[in-house]
Amino acid sequence: MNPLQVSRFLRAYDDAAAKKGIELSIGFDFGEYISITRALPTKGPTYPSFRPDRSPIKSGEGYWMVGVDKNGEVVLVEAARLFDLSHSNFAEHLESLKAFYADPTIHAHPQDRCTCTASMAKKITGKVAYHGDFWLRRDFRGQSLPRIMAAILRGVSFAMWAPDFVCGLAGGWILDKGVLAQYGHAHHELGGAILQLVEDNIADADLLVWLTGEELRDLVDRREGNELL
Image (cartoon, rainbow, N blue to C red; front, side, top):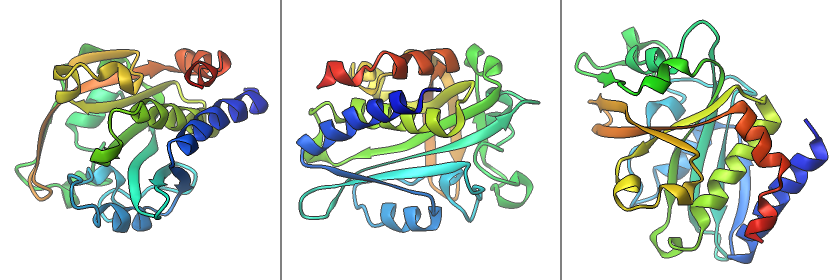
C-alpha cells in the first residue's frame, strides 16, 4: 500500500464533497452513530450489524462517516465493519444471522430469517469489509454524492484493512431505478439477502454488491478521484 496514494485518493473525494457544501467526519463509537441516525426522520432502521447492543464492533474493526451541511445539519451517513471470514463465507455469515448479531441465539427473534442465493456470496471469504447503512438527504440527491460516499468508504477500508473483498447489501430499488452505477458497484448479483428481522421491522430483498481486494487496490491506484474533479 502506498500511503500517499491513499491520501490523494481520499483527498480528491473529500474536496469534491466540500465543493458541494458538505463537511465529512469519521467516527468509531457506534453508540454515538446510532444516536445520530435515530434522529434522522426519513432514514430507515439501521441493520443490527452496526448496533453495539446487538453486534459490538471491536476497536479498529469498524467506523462510520457523517456529512453535515453549512448549518451543521446531517446530510449523509454510512458505516463499515470488518468481518473475519477466514473459516466461513459471506453466504453462511448471512444465513446464520451472524452478519447481524454477535450471538443470534441471544439477540435474534425466533422468526428472524435470512436466505442468500447469490452464488458469489459463497466465494467471499477472508478479510471482508462490509459497507452499509447508506443514507442521503433528499435535497442532496442527484449530485453524484453516492459515488463520493462509496469511494471514501472504500478508500478508508483499504487504508485500514486491505481487505480481500468489499461487499454490501443494496436495496433492489437502486437496480430498478438504474442508479447502481452511481454507487460505484463493480459487480452485483440478485439474491444477496431475503431478510426478515422482526424487532427492527426489516423485511428486505437485497442485491449482493462487491469488489475484490485487487479491484479495490486498482481503484485507489488509478486515482479515480481525479476523473470526478
